[in-house]
Length: 255
Image (tube, rainbow, N blue to C red; front, side, top):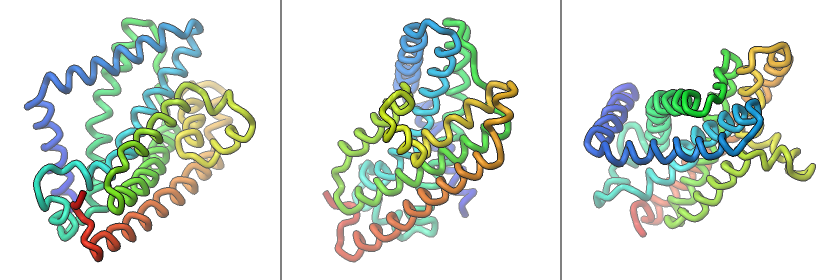
């Protein structure tokens, strides 16, 4: 059942790109120009490579962060959300399936963007090893937990686009190194946020040096996994609770 739903989502995403090629091409070009502007403005090659990795990770976090709230607010067909609530997969299951499909769709695009920036700007590309990929999965899971929490608010209050955009802009600010260069309390708070918690492990595991081996340890990955479990578990609990409240009070699919 879940594999069939995942196949449907993948085909739907591919069909959307084929049907609206100009939209897909313009969005990809806009991201490329943004990454190029940032990397060219960074004079140090190593700093430019790090900045590119941080921003690609920020883009990677947008899907799970924004997806659940869009799931319950962006369907244009009347009654679509109500039908999803009573489907065998359910809203939380569909949010997870769409996020997995989003990862599959994002990876080729990220590879093309990284290669394009590498060729045109000469910026080195970080290629994470197995510990880095594990941390990347943990980052995605933690951000999905946060996205489910925002989706819970969308089920109850509907108009949460401004809040979702605010959190998204905060992630991009962290991608520019705001958290690492900020005051001490902000750096300490970053240890409890999936993006800033997992990003150092991803970056260190992609350098391939001795320092990377020391940083990408089992303890670091365990910390990422624990934090992800807390965020994802809390997000699922809030989403299930909000779905039940919305159904009991007739709020599903209502503006």
